[in-house]
Length: 323
Ligand SMILES: [Zn+2]
Image (cartoon, rainbow, N blue to C red; front, side, top):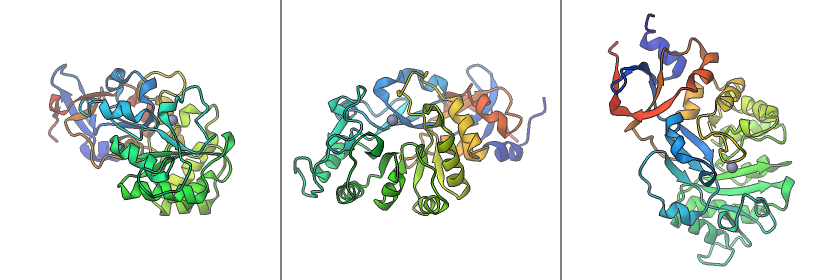
């Protein structure tokens, strides 16, 4: 079959796409920048299965900071992490079976003084000192009390002082608005419990908020997909994320998640961008690449299924076809 030219390939798959041959197996295929799953829970996942199934890096959004502080930083998958969920007494997810005490911290005061028991600054410092690259807060009004504005503002200020963005779990009425009002940098799940109006969407885009998709974790993802479609159409940054570890799913690139993103209008180069955005890292690891064996997909609608064959390979194994 005739090879598509480089312009056609990049129009379909974005600027990182290259036609390549893999030295080890002599397979022809397509190379892309490495993929990140921007929402996983490592302690509930078979991490060694991830690279063979397309995931080179991951962001853990709720785990034991002491475990992550000890874990080697090198190797594939590369894992960045938030450490524990910050919440308020009685708040989500402190009473969930999957959330032992090590992965939850109660913030009881907005104190900015270091070392104050239960202080906002104290919890943020603990995660930052354990090597966290984001701070995770729970704003789930459907499952108990949530932060008041003063305490939430103090958490965000302490995180930003340490150079860390804040990711919120928003669930329930007006929680997206609360996250925006408090200057939250990213949402761990595209909002899935309420339809947002255009004004709120526009504010989220203007604020540079990032939304992590996680459609495939919902029984009915339609609200999340509709909100994301509006957010993406208005120029918002959408990141691929699955909440892997939540529920029984294989440790791999999730084609259902990719189909949801396509449905939300995050298609073609935008879909690849949602996967290859290294956030919260400043840059991806260029020692590895994504390799998809076989010919490129025929059209944007075929990309999710096609990506099901993606693997992570050392970049040096791939020889780029000269144009
Ligand atoms: Zn999660």
